Image 1 (cartoon, rainbow, N blue to C red):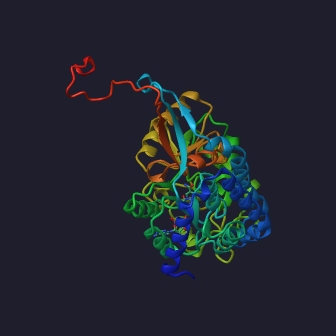
Image 2 (tube, protein in one colour):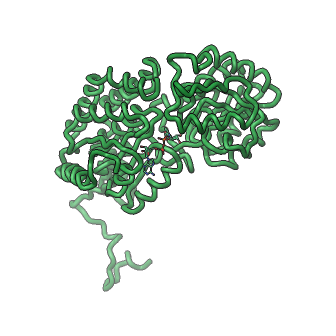
Image 3 (cartoon, rainbow, N blue to C red):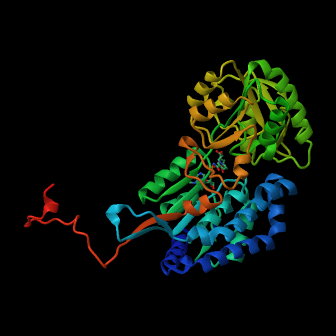
Length: 458
Ligand code: NAD
């Protein structure tokens, strides 16, 4: 195991957490709120190192690092601090006639010991956003960040060490082998963010213990541009959503399906927008780099699978790839089969909206879908006929930042959701309780085998 920790030590540390959860200490609201406060304060203490780690691992600039990672996490903590009391309160439900005399409620109960496995693309935010939900719901947490962003993983460990006692929260650094060792252990809930391939492994491992899971997975997110769309705005918002983080965003527009009448105009506009927002990418100091040589090689191999309309430059020294648009791409080419997860945007055309529906529905259910149109009937058809995790009309990515919405996939793009109050719900078991009266006892439900009672004559 490529880690500083042997499997025996790992088991012992997990046992300590199980024991701590059993003491009931994590259940009080006061405890959960203090843990959220400690987490916020530890992030503040380590903020400069977090920025530095994001720079080293992904070349993220201050603005990106704040808006998509650190600020996002502060927002989730603050909102949770404000609403936890209300969310955690038992919820009374109505009493049907059969239950007259009783009162019923839903109690929110922590699952217990939670495992969070995180990816590398937003390595800070995607690690801590689920952790916030797990803490708020009263669970203990083990966090396994990605080995591909080792500096962020180290700072996450330091943040945890500052904020929590290890019997409550620990970070275990390491690769797939460490992750497998963790998955051999019994947890009460597993929250996984990563690829669909590994999501299947996690789901199988969880099934051994019947552990419930949330799987936040990936896939190809289509972006549909209809002929009546505001093309300039579409180009601007697609360029922003595609090339943010150099395309390494789970919900980035993966490819564009555009009505053939407006393709040429759109190609001009998106080139202008890409340049305005990201320059030529490779030469821009704040442009995010590709996470590893393997990923850069994978992305470079796509460049020969169609016509490059603009972009295509690769700097292997700095591991950067320019914002790139490709046309004449075959639908069975790897670039149209794999999740691209990088700055290449294939543009394909259609004539009828039905073609779009068939094209997307013949593939795995996407994590996100974006539609640009002014036509309500087209909007209604697409939203009603295509299943996908979540998305936007006339925008990209923004649904992930709308904390009143649940965020998650469907089918091959995942199961379950989180953010805001949904994070609390995800990590809570809903326990249904009937509290009955003892002042009277209605006879209807009881068997009367030796009785002529009229109640039994049905
Ligand atoms: P990945 O699946 O390779 O790795 C994710 C985590 O799983 C890492 O911590 C890794 O160490 C661990 N892991 C890898 N192999 C494993 C194995 N065999 N057994 C157990 N654990 C293993 O994903 P990634 O490359 O880090 O992230 C990219 C993928 O994540 C993309 O598909 C992207 O769409 C998806 N993603 C989804 C979301 C979402 O919210 N739905 C967010 C970000 C990324």
